Image 1 (spheres, rainbow, N blue to C red):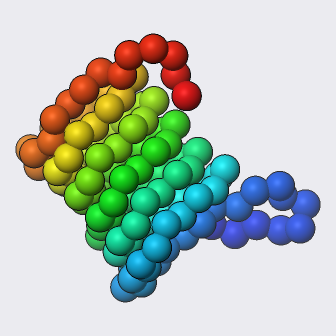
Image 2 (image 1 turned 90 degrees about the horizontal axis):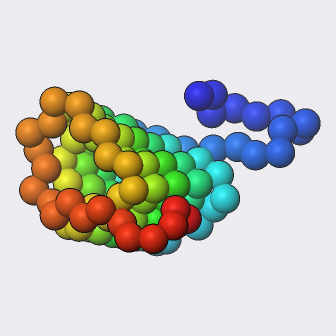
Image 3 (image 1 turned 30 degrees about the vertical axis):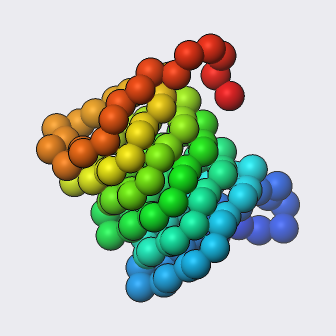
Length: 116
């Protein structure tokens, strides 16, 4: 996924780079890539937390890619959890994909009802 857009594109990702610290909520209809630190809630179409990324807060998204760490609950349609990921909180999901993970300390809860 490219982080650059031009004037003809209708959407662009929000990127929080390594070394960047954000205190506050993010709400977007598009993708959020996090490689730094966020204290706040995130509502987005897709959330990608990179290996160096850390979020403290709640996430609501259609698709989560967790490589880094999340301290807080997440409500997702599809959760993709990778080998270096760490999470504390409640993960509510419709579809769960875990890849050789040993850092989860969260409650897994299958969502009831329809997808978002």
